[in-house]
Length: 466
Image (cartoon, rainbow, N blue to C red; front, side, top):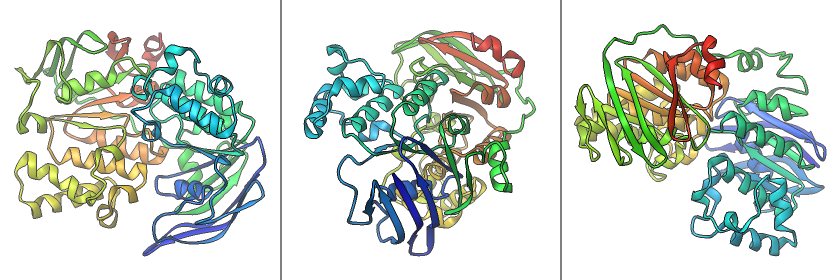
C-alpha cells in the first residue's frame, strides 16, 4: 500500500530527512518514533506530497501504486491526515453535522457509518454542536470521522493521544486498531506504539537507525535503548512549611468549591480525566480567566482577576499547544526575550542574551531560536514556550501537559530541569506514574471537584486511581 524509497528532504543549511526507506502493507500499522526534530513529521507529510518551502526532495514515494511528489499529491481522500492538535483543522463556525454531510456528499459515503467507526454519537443534539463544545478526545475522533468519509487507503496519525487521559487514550487505540486500513503512526507514546504497530521505524537526525517489529522490546542501538528506558529522576522534596499559593472555595465554569494550597518550593501535580477542570483551575491561578466565587492568594495577598505586569510575572503559564501561543511571523528568540522586556523591564539586548542562554539550557541552539515557530518541531516549540515563561522569573510556574509531544528522552531531560528550578511548580498531567515520580503532592479533580489531595509516590497510585 505504501512504499518510501531513499526519501531525502533538504532545506538550505540542513537535511531534514536523509535516505529514509520503508514499506507498509494494507491494513497494517507502521510507527515512526524518535526525538523531536528527528524527521517524523517531514516524512509523514511527504506521503501527502507536502514539503517545507524551498525544500529539495529526492527519492520515491508511492501510495496505492501511485507516485507521489511535490506538485503531484495523492488524489483527494487517498491519504487521510489526523494532526496532533485536531482543533486546528476543525471549522469553528460550522456545526459538526454540516461539515460531515458536505464531506459525505463529496465522497459518496455515509455519515452514520463514519461516526460509528469513530465511536461518536449520531443524534441530532451532537450533530448540532460546534467543535469548541467537544472535549479534546471528541475533537480527535471527529477528525477521524472526517478522514473516514473520504475512504482513505492510508491514514497518517500525528501524536493522536497527545494530552489525552488514560481512558480516552485506550479509546483512540481501539479506534485506530479496528479501521482496516494502513496507518502511519507518529508517536512518543511508546505504550501506544507497542499496542498498535506491526512495524517500528526509529528516526534520529533524519536517518533510520533501527527498524523492525520488536524494536521496543529488544532494541539493538543505544539510541533506541535510551528511548525505551528514559525516565525522569525522582527529585528530593524541597517544599517549605509555608503556603505560597492558597486557593479557597474557587468556582469557575465546571469548578465547584475547590480549596487547595501549594507550599513554597513544592511540586504539585494536578491530574484527572479530560474535562475534569484541570486547565480551568490552572488558568484561574495564572489570571488567564475570571472566576465566579472564591479567592486566590499569593504570599498572603489576594490576586486580582485583572492583573498588572508584576502579578503576571509572578505566576507564569506554559500552554499545551505551544504553536498556538506564538506569533507565526516573528523569530522565536525575539518572542522569548519579549517576556523579560515587558515583565521585568530589561533592555532588549540583555533580554535577548538571556533568552539565547535559556533556550540553550533547554536544548535549543541559536539557529533554532532565529527561526519562526512553524520551522520548529512540536517538542522544540514546547521547550521554547518553557524558556519564555522562565524569563519572567516567576514564583509559580504552571505547566499544562507540556511534555505530551516530547520523546521519552527529552521528556526526562525537561522534567529533570523543571524539578531543579527554584520555583513552585504546578504540573497538569494525565500521566499518574509520571506525576507520582516528579511531584511532592498530587491533587485529583473529577467533574470540577477536588476529590483527593495527598502525597505523591508510587505507593499512593492505587488510591489516586479510585
